[in-house]
Image (cartoon, rainbow, N blue to C red; front, side, top):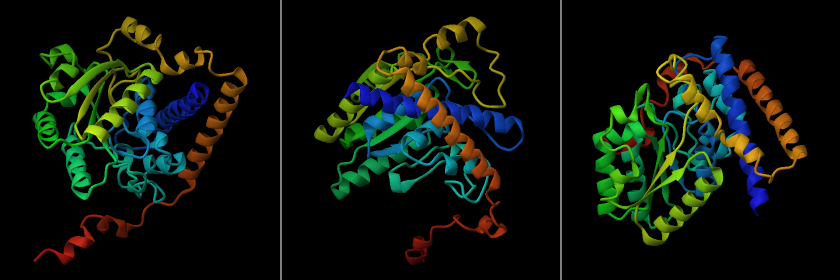
Amino acid sequence: MEQSLAEKFYYFMKLGRVFELRAKEEYMKGNIGGFLHLAIGEEAVHVGATIAFDKGDIFVHYRDHVYALAKGIDPKYLMAELFGKKTGISKGKGGSMHFYEPSLNFYGGNAIVGAHIPHSVGMAYARKFKGENTGVLVAFGDGATNAGNFYESLNLASLWKLPVLFLCENNYYAIGTRIDRASAITDIYLKAKPYMLSKQIDGMDIFEVYKAVKEAKEYIQEESKPYFIEAITYRYEPHSMSDTGNYRSVRELEIAKSKDPIEKLKKSGLLSENYINYIDNLVEKEIEEAVEFAKNSPEPEEIELYTDVFCEVCKNVLP
């Protein structure tokens, strides 16, 4: 069981790492425009949490690439979205920050810090109202916990006893502002304690992430109550492609990179060298095919400017 999990973890973490490194390369070539936020270094949280939460509803922030891959979305459609192509997962309209696939219960990224947290509470309320016990996971960064709607969401989830798992990825920085310069409480899980059970975990250890999220999901479904996890992690790249990242020292980055979750898994003894080589080659091939697919895909037609801007169903209920 542990070995099969390790193999699954390695595949998706490696897939996410190579996908983002290639996206960075294509961005620098001018093939990808707009914003591009990379999650390199945070793969253990994204992959471990997604696999542990299985078929439940997931809402995430704008660093959404690896979550989408771990949910099972084909990298071809994600890369095409980054390229702004018609075949993209959001028809080329959403870009990096708005991956979305409701058929997989993936309600996507959100460009506004913390804006999706209330959405997740609303989804949990709807599920509970309909008698559907799927559970809802919402992931966000430490910066989002300083916003008012974060506390409003915790309050309502607790008050209405909703099955929401709040997952905070504490990578210590909100863009370029270090956590101790923006938050009076730097152990984020303490912010949630007045509302619900909460804990802090090592977000660089994928097995710890998986175990914590799996147990939390069982809790929120069985008790119909919210739960809060703070995962301590680190992003190796700057905030976005437009950021220099010069607010972090070389030494700080070296220490963080010594805890690389992918390298940690490779050294665990659970993966054979043959398997690692096989996955490394497979992933390179898959991402190369994804890039070629994106390059050869058509641009959206002009008429697409006028679609997906109004809910067709709403026409039946509006005056």
